[in-house]
Image 1: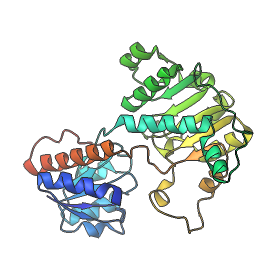
Image 2: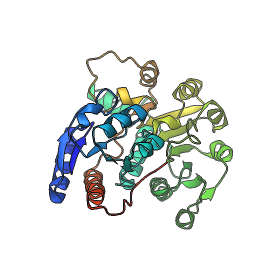
Image 3: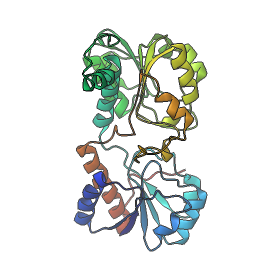
Length: 331
């Protein structure tokens, strides 16, 4: 199958090429993101392979369908950037990678949390300037803290087990309780307001959809335990960034670790070190000493990249052979 691969980077091309060669697929790599302005690049390909910040709205889908594309292969788990109804109307199948390494994301969540708590980012910068003062670097024991896990699917459950291993009490919120997590950690499920009020640490692990958009908003931040830490390694749209800024300014939010940001599409995955940052909200977040922002790298491990490539190519092969699309998503 001939595949147009959009929004590609050096760290993933080798893995994708190896997996494609094993299954006989031919890949054309484009650094550009898929959107209406670049959709004609898909001409001559049977499938497009896209990532989280590609724009697959109705206009884009109509263009690629007219150019002969039959399959959209997401090399990620989320599909909130795809107009699924428009895809169905244009006879476009959509497949995804439902999981690649939940451990990668859960472990990055822990990395952000520990770095914030023990001020690792500040200590690193100080030591580079030969400043070895300990003033302002006081953290706290994780042991005994209450960790609120919002979303207890595979990633959330793994993070819950990690936090439990540190001696934390686990509170959870999800539409479906995870019985295995309860058995392993003694996790207790609570309403969202009760979880917010009781948690020293909040970690977000839910998909982005209408019901979860800005689940952390001004009201939720008011309900939080004062000084609680917030970590988001899921989707940027879960957090109202302006409300978070106000919470940080007032001290209601003690610290924030963000691997995702609602308007990241125009910033993340690119080098803007010589540019003036145009996003005022992101620029403001970067000024806080108690905020760490990483550029959507939680998934970025060798194991995850390999799993993404293998599953993506298997999805393509299933379509090519007329086999059931086990990873298909639909409206």
